[in-house]
Image (cartoon, rainbow, N blue to C red):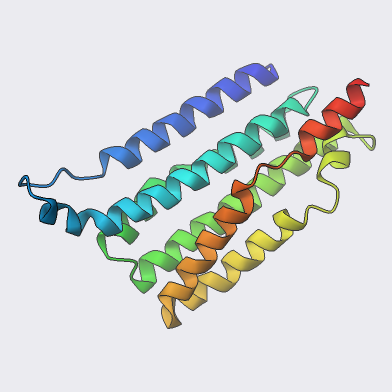
Length: 194
């Protein structure tokens, strides 16, 4: 399988995940602005999840461009990542419908944590396939954001049962951390081309 086919498949799955999420937003009965108020929590959870999926899609795209070949372990690691991302619509809906209650917020964080671990495993599979001089390994370097994010998710999960808004603040903080474009892979590829 080529890198392009893997990327196209992954893009399609992520597009379907986003479509499922938006279909979960219910149309209000009534025409006044007050009918939108009950939709605020589901909409906010949708926005947060949409941002997360956009971040994964963007970084996944760049990471695959650093791969020179696709191996069996890369295929399975990619499916593992897509599995966890496919659970985001369920946890998003549950969290939004229950106004960010403790258990749904903790499960949301668990899915984010597992997706972060799966992303790291995919990254490692690509690095292993390219050998010790891996372009991706040079690009990610110490990867402080990649190490900080799972730690913050692990903190936010139990925090949801004690202080749910603190937990949500951590999820938003991690999203904002990654929202700033990560140019490491692009820069490493440009340097390699020179």
